[in-house]
Length: 327
Image (cartoon, rainbow, N blue to C red):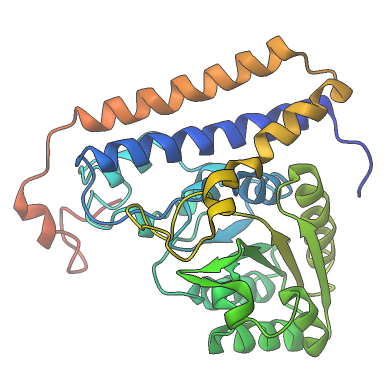
């Protein structure tokens, strides 16, 4: 741990988790109502990972994300209204409504992109980290991935390259117990993904992914190390996703206890139970939570009320110099 956290930081962590939770719940409801096209993959139950990791970063640091990336993007500063507009396939979205849930990007906020290709956040992350190193910029990258990506070739290649060149990157594994529909033990041969860091010659740390303070502290240590030029780290956060791999997943691979008691793994509740020690009252927490709920619900209502774009938007931004190209 890096010492006791400030009241202001704990307030920020709590609000960020509430924003992520509300965004995911609202997205789930709108999807079930048939308002959102395509697929969405939610991170309900994993809010501490995104909130804690991104709170350890500076505004001009970067993240790369996954198909389950709403929380990462929100925690790093992406705009909830533009994200909702993208989910609703509206032109005011980050990609004019054409890319949907799995491809949110906001370079101005340091969000280099979520993507639907398992493990590719690590390849994109080391590219950004190498660029920072070459340009002698004092910034770092956090590359989020799931344990399902830990066996992909890109994982080995990215970590090996990051180690050789001492790139300023933190590999952050959200081990949420399942890779799509397969339990952890079926596809990972070791107890901890973090133990693989030893093969590359850098630190690997296991952290309780339901404890936002522990996540923040572990990432802060790794980020500070990377910023000093001392190379990469691998952090594995043990967490649990409440919903299925995708919305609509029947989750037949989960046992009855997990289906009934999944929400017992609740990082928001855990922080609430400790908040008094940081000067936050029950009323303080209620006010923060209500503000987060209001902001996200307003974003969803705004996005739902927008007009759908014309079909011609599909061919915009195809060629360089297009007068309709996004700024």
